Length: 624
Image 1 (cartoon, helix red, strand yellow):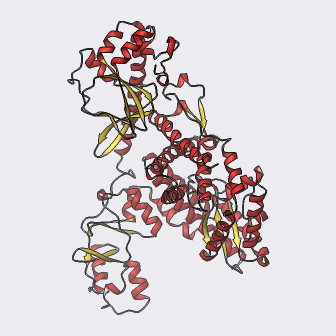
Image 2 (cartoon, one colour; image 1 turned 30 degrees about the vertical axis):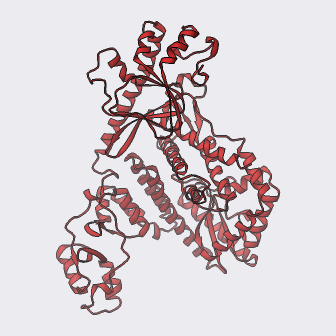
Image 3 (cartoon, rainbow, N blue to C red; image 1 turned 90 degrees about the vertical axis):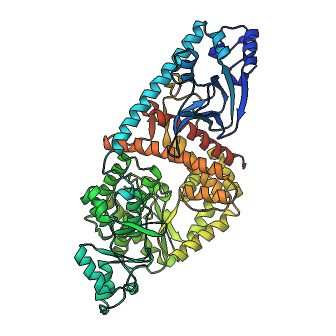
């Protein structure tokens, strides 16, 4: 008997469809059914495939989806014990108007699946049983409720996307198509005259319609007037050749992120090596809050008085991006770049306070900032490394100055005192070597906690050569750290990622009603990637960068690495929106999420994501 599907010998427990029947009858009916195995991504039911009956999922997870312009939209996740094909009941009852075909919906295996295909002939023999009627009615009602909730969500999203100021507007809808161009041999006088005539601030330089460079008003001032070049100088001598470009199929947020990252105000739109148009920072500002955008542009020149304004402008941008449903990876990418610029400005102000450094040094951030996952300003998490102990007094002053300036920018002081103002979080190369050796040799729970936070580090400011020396020093120490790795893994075994084995839509049937996204999901995931990386000689990098390196080292398969990254994006999207809603409502910050506040899609995504992240954790455990 099929014990894995809920059928037990002796009739002790059977699937609700077969409840009340004697064992012999169950065996006879199941013999008529067809049992099949599907590997991951195999099609279980095609979108135009005639349904032969209901499909019972004996094991694994399946996705019901619809194809749309090359993108598959998952409508529902079905788990072990679930039924697929309720809409085919209309055909079975003789009330279908679709000729027995599912015109749009298809079903595929999200992982290896065992299914039992229950033909309509078997369903006919069970139909007179009131228990079967009640079970199917309950299931259809739950499914119908999910459909209505999903439709409501889609309508809300459609209205958001209908906003003409959305960050999801394609570049081709923003760009100026009539681009003013000149050949490389044109003179700077011709370029200046063209700008004045057309009231523009840049000229695209092309040859046979291919991009060669760009000349802006700033270029004319800094490279022509200030250098006293003659007006008949060819623009190819003063143009910017390494030009940042963007595709017309990219989005508003892609263009904004590139302008912020490269510090430019003009982006030629290029496809097939030909200039299709141009988009400017002014174009983007007209689409959004201009004062917010101008404030963000001023980060590099902020002083201690204006620093607090930067935080609120970044928050406003984040809120707009979340409202516009910009993919969470893109949100974090852009927001992290802005926070990095804010930190760099804080560092410049701190160095200016205490004077020029007497030797080379490097400044690192840890925690969510180190992982490039910071969206709301958290408390400070950073440390300093410098060349020699003889300059310890200077760096003690610098550490305190960094903390003070960052506090004015909106970063609270770390309650655990993991900051460069503390002696334990600054030191020379030799001091850090001794500190790491202490953590590794005396691997107490406290030292392991310090190490876990430390190994989320990211180089932010300072001397790159010193940074490379520091990392090589760490790499050499880790080559002799097997016991240290063992202790890290042992601690993680006490923090296994939970799974939600039953369909989460049946909330009333679950024992637990909440999940701590930070402690139960994100921390174990971060630590799993971190420890796996350290074991394989990868000492730094964001979690996604580490996953890519683990894939290159064949520790993770390409398909599994992709699954993990997708799972993390899903978890972060749920977590960030949850925290943002708390912030907007002036509620006390909490990482505990109630299932009842989640949308249907979020629930289904969380089920699959937790299963994937638990597999990652299991791969770590298999090393010891």
